[in-house]
Image (cartoon, rainbow, N blue to C red; front, side):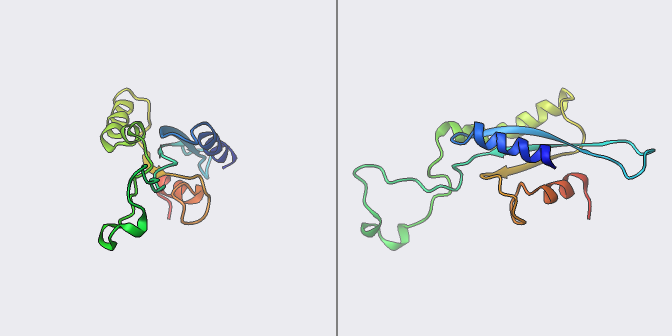
Length: 138
């Protein structure tokens, strides 16, 4: 758990303003010594600006001048084109397939979209939830 949290902190520090795709490997030690070690790979599609709203461009109407029907929050407003290309589903799928073909991943893999490394129960990167999903524990 400590190593997992350290890797997430490092991802957040090194890529605080840009998107990235990271692969983390978890190990599940068996309850009995005769059982094999289980490995699980997690692809974290990291985009810290995913949930930010875009700042209005110079010369555009402010919120009070925009009609109510046009006020739609943009989930990708603050993302750059490079961030969108990095976290694009097609790009990530190709990376995952390449890793699988070249035996860089094990047969258990999980993809998680994340914008923060919070460890609350509802967080997509919460250790217990990720562990259960990766190793299919109830």
